[in-house]
Length: 423
Image 1 (tube, rainbow, N blue to C red):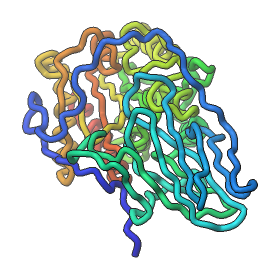
Image 2: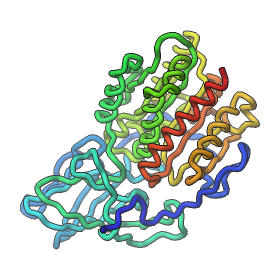
Image 3: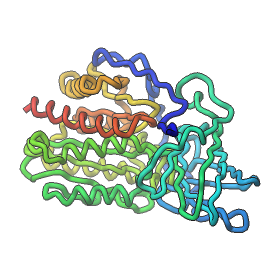
Image 4: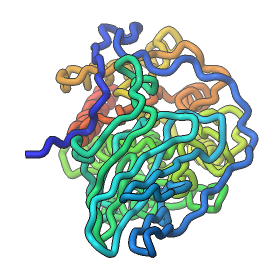
């Protein structure tokens, strides 16, 4: 049996948080976010189309939602070199790639993956339909100029070579699973067949794509939970956990029905549709990290959510919990420290502890923040401007997909229990 797995070179240290004020001693997460300008910057939009080689017998394409392939060369003997570059710089090292390859005749080819000012963060996923993905067989993966240490971008190879079998049926080679705006909208619409769920636009992105919101409400109350996801395009694992989280809250269980009898739920599952569909590493098409724009609101995507929250609050809504789903090197929670939120923020730490107790096989790191101004990030804006206990919920790039689903489900169930206890 061939060995297939989601990580070939990441070794994670997972140590549980012992109390709500102490961060885990394993992965410490990112440091304090730097204050940066969020005025739009130039973006290099990639060319999209089809490359052909060997007398038009081998083809590569990035011409689909979330595609990213900036260049490809033939080196002879069925060897190719792919170039992956970012939309602009400086940028977080999240080198997203996604392309299709096929051939008129069956053959095995080798592709060398090279990156602009980065290393090989994401382990390749393979698909024949763009929907169902599996990690590349490890026997077909070779790291070049291997990194140092056991964790983070410095630990991964600078370049990788992968071998794939191709034929007339295109295969997708991607950094993570594909969830472009069309697929996400189809998911929203599938849930919106339920009578208590509606979906509508709350704004438009810089390239005029819809910023869609899903509303779960029976119209009887004015307390609500706010959830957002995919501010950063490659962060698919966060989206997958969020997807399970939302499906559980919208489910048919007695607990979910009781939750919806008392609370509304508002969800923006795709905050950065331009970045996602253009295959960006991090930014929107204004060249900005959206999760630094919750102070000055220079970008239309953050403006859309800000205006929505203000409108709902002016209409009498009280927001009781907010979550922003992301991905990083390992599962980690970023709450606001209880020395700032006091009793109001206790629900966030109770939630973390309850999830950890239910899923002891993977204790998650916790890093509370003691800095909330300038707001800049969504969690801080939610709390400072709307009094909403809030958290950035990060899932590891290589967290097993079945566990992501289970964690999203457990997170929803524990939140429902805690909110029930507050009534």
